[in-house]
Length: 158
Image 1 (cartoon, rainbow, N blue to C red):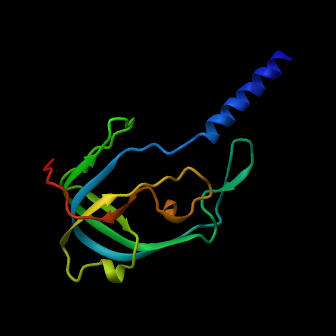
Image 2 (image 1 turned 120 degrees about the vertical axis):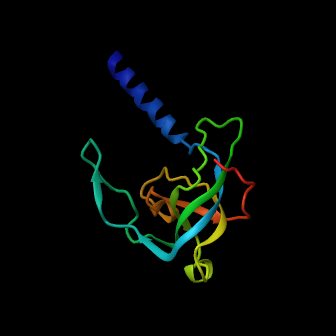
Image 3 (image 1 turned 90 degrees about the vertical axis):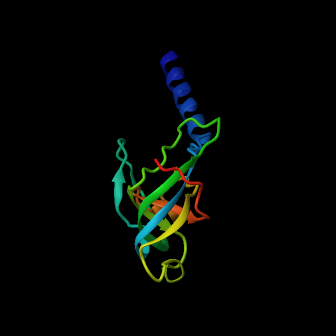
């Protein structure tokens, strides 16, 4: 009886922790980047399934869910990190000269410049992908950083 109570207590504590889960704020990176390549991109959720350790199957992405926007290949000219004092996991600024793939919400016809290379100010956006299956900007692979266009930040020549 005692072991059953302990197991039930463990399950209830775990369920409470999951119900109270929230994304961790890591601050924002603002950067001036030089656009090297610009193109439209559309990502669509697949029907691919994975299996939990207990054997139950699930999909990472909502089948048919889609997100379309603009893909930029850029070189970092400068960056700054916006942080707060209550932040547990601070970000590092992007290194000058680093190459990044960025996603902008919006039509590439409107966002891609007429000539490249050209510079642009960007800022990372809040993105919380803690619910399966993924939809919206959570369909964007981890190697591509969702950003918004902003005025170029104060120079940080790291």
